[in-house]
Amino acid sequence: MSETSAATPAAQPGQQSSQVTARRGAAHDSVFLRAARFEPVPYTPVWFMRQAGRSLPEYLKVREGIPMLESCMRPELVKEITLQPVRRHGVDAAIFFSDIVVPLKAVGIDVDIKPGVGPVIADPIRSFDDLQRLRPLEPDDMPYIAEAVGLLVDELGTTPLIGFAGAPFTLASYLIEGGPSRTYENTKAMMYGEPELWAALVDRLAQITSAFLKIQIEAGASAIQLFDSWAGALAPDEYRRSVLPASSKVFDAVAPYGVPRIHFGVNTGELLGLMGQAGADIVGVDWRVPLHLAAERVGPGKGLQGNLDPAVLFAPTRVVETKAREVLHAAQAIGDSGHIFNLGHGVMPSMDPDALTRLVAFVHEASAR
Ligand code: CP3
Image 1: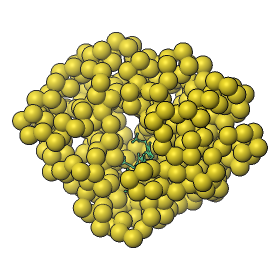
Image 2: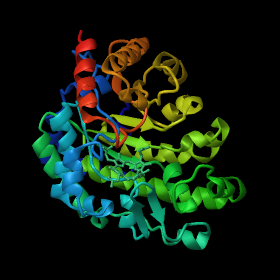
Image 3: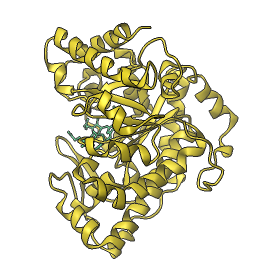
């Protein structure tokens, strides 16, 4: 676990009210947070990326007629959607219902989330002039976030809330491409061809991401996850040179709060060591690398999160259980603690929610010690 770094001036955890500290304190001894601190746990904690969302009929019902980004700005709705998978599945942590592009919208970027597509940016950022449109994020830009987090931690009690944000590379890829991409050609063209512009862009994004995370932590989130979902598109040397410094800035900015920091990306088998070095306490692993190998790549002193292939959930229950047991077994490489069970990527909309509920119970039971 990271030590408080007095040298980081950006964060001012001393400004948190004691009320917030007390609220976060209710979850302090939860199995999730104990595992994240490498303390002994009675069983392996489990939550799912994208656990709130279209796999749940109750989600589809409350979201009816409300566009995705608008729903993220309604605190009561955010509270309800965040709580739905906690109630239904009995997962060990809630993840805040929002999106990685919400802070971009908050600083005035024209972004929309198109159903079945993802974030779409009206005017991509491809020059120093364009970069002027990406101003720093202030807490007043998104009052609805602190409000929703506050409502949630009160309601969650001893269940921890995970805050999150998109990492600079993944956000940059949407801003530069204008939407989802398979090749990241414009992103890489800037990264390789205009390194000064690239550095300025990811530096600005590091500020925005740090500010977004701080708002969530100061309002009571107990842990954070930095999603660099698409960083797996990069070779290790390029990641080290062009991405790691900006992501490190984000981890440094939130270090003084002392909350566990998780770092995740898809297809990042070759980057796991570097993603840990960027400043994470726990490295999220997709399903392509077994956890005992991930442990070697990440090195000692860090936890692991993952990593059941989400598609396994479409197979019969006995297969799901065999595969889940394999994940628990591979995780023993890091000892009895420091492992948080998750899927290797998000829950898919077509998944049977009952299969997820059964998986939570199975992980708890099979890992009981
Ligand atoms: O339950 C949770 O995980 C919390 C909420 C959450 C959402 N997005 C809600 C959402 C989280 C943590 C995210 C993060 C996010 N958003 C990432 C990183 C995680 C990952 O999957 O790698 C990325 C890359 C995005 C960008 C984004 N937003 C995509 C690719 C999509 C999917 C587009 C689609 O329709 O398939 C979104 C939209 C989105 N964000 C949805 C949800 C529940 C679906 C939209 C809807 O329900 O209408």
